[in-house]
Each structure stands twice: as C-alpha cells, then as structure tokens.
Length: 220
Image (tube, rainbow, N blue to C red; front, side, top):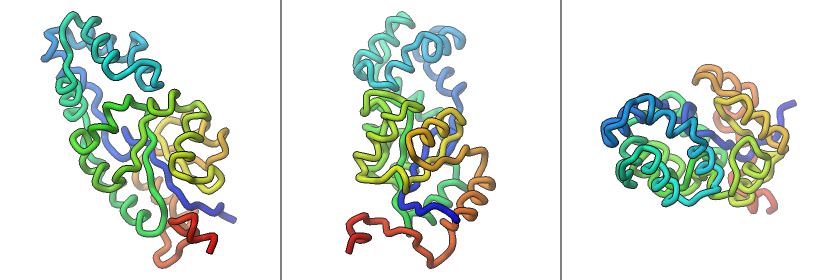
C-alpha cells in the first residue's frame, strides 16, 4: 500500500535543472582573472559555500569573502551571471512536475544561499515559472540538508506534513536525511526512474487525486 502524499518537494540543481559546475567556475575565472583551480577551491574547498548554504553568513559577507579569497571585487551580478551560465532546465523532469502540479502541491528545497531564491526568475526562469513563490533556500532556515531541521522548517513554511511529503534529491545523503526527519524519499538518477517511482506511488494516474492540494479542503 502506497503512502498518502499531498506534497512533492524537489531539490533543484541536478534534478529540476542540469548543473554545470565547470561553467560556473569558468565564468568567475574570467571575471576575476584567477585560474580555474583557484576559483574552484574558493567555492568548494574553502568552506565558504557550505557556510552560505547553511545561512551562517549573510549574502553580502559571502560575496565579500569570495572577493577576498580571489583578490578581486565579486559583485552580485558577477555571481548571478556565473550561476546562470551553469544552469539549463531538465525538460523531461519539468514536464513530470507540471503533470504533478495539477493534482498535488509542489515546492523546491535547495541547498543554496538566499541570492538564489531572491533572484530565481533570472537564475532559473523555468523553475520560477512552475513553482512560483515555493522555492526555498536552505540558508533561510539557518541550516542545510541533510539536517532534519532544514526539511521540517521548510514544511512549516508550507504548512505541510512530513508524513504526506515525498522528497526527491540526487544525493543519497540528503534523501536519507529527509527520511530520518519523517518524510518519504527518492534518490533521483534520471527522468525515467523518477517516472517509475511516481507511477509506483500512483501519483501520475490521470483523474486520481490521492490527496487534496489544499489541507483546509481535506478537512471539509
């Protein structure tokens, strides 16, 4: 027997979107005049990205520190342009999400700083169009996946129940964290396997709503 699901919560990078990290590094390398390896280390080996994702530092501090590491001024526009260059929509997955959205609530929880969600219409217009205001950055919750607090605070913002939420992420550790927090989980590999999982859970059956999109409506 499949669980009752009312909300499907998605990771963004490498699920809803293809994420080319090398394109992001290359763009900042050109802007800063630093080598590819120097920029890569500044983003992922300095601990700066993790601190920003967890909301431990402000967006302004994040950009300032990035500039200090690279020895140049990194503007908000520089950073956003690099992120934009690294993203392309996963068309097959977005088509599945559109089908789901007709019968279920959908939202995004991404390990990112708030620069991402505050500029989502520029950085990722396909996701912005489909999910509207329901795109949440981990930084806004003061922690990052796979910490249970991240998922639960996101669900609080959505007014959703963990027991009725399916979480989809490409990283097994993040899915394990969601399950530990009481959500259902699926490790994303590609659109085909996701389709199979959604069909197994009977979430793609036409004309069948396993749960109302509106919690208040279910109480009536």
